[in-house]
Image (cartoon, rainbow, N blue to C red):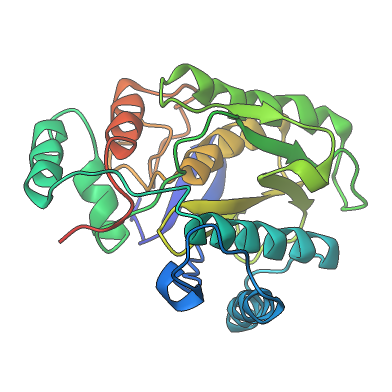
Length: 281
């Protein structure tokens, strides 16, 4: 089966489903442009500029990404909070030289798919900043979308929790309050592409750390298909790209037989979280 950039195909039984990681990257104003004094808070003008940039991103993706008004407000708040942390110098970049970055990449080539992932993502590392608290995930508990059933909720939550054993120094935690979440999972029957079962939208702050993510899962497939898709999309939420190996959960094209996170998935995620965010030169 042919592989396409940013598109994964998975066969579950005789059904072909598509896992698409649509990733929107928004770079907000840098700390120097927002102000040089550490601890400075955002002005109303700064906050408005961030909101304008976010909505401009949505406008540029009209027809491919739709987000509810209530979730837009949360997204803007997350980006503004990221900007405040940038200004206050609370999420400093790891101190690691260019040579050390390339040495890490070379050491991990045989056990990971980091090179294939970087080729797909234009050599850009995307990940969450180190944090003491878990990444909070809210899974929409009710939906009027045709095909939705509450039976989809627990398998989706378990799909995220499966990544907690990888050892990245951060974990996912399920929350009931959508306003507290860093990651929102919502439901939709009619996806943008035929046979598509999931998609992930994420945005980064000025220093390249992920600020939030939004996963959309299809209600047109059975629980097992959705759970596998959610496990794949959770990897994208962490910053992972696609693997060329059909056995990996992050495979761009598979035979539908991958139900667990593989050693290569784990090794790639761990390597990803040893690297600084941003462009690798």
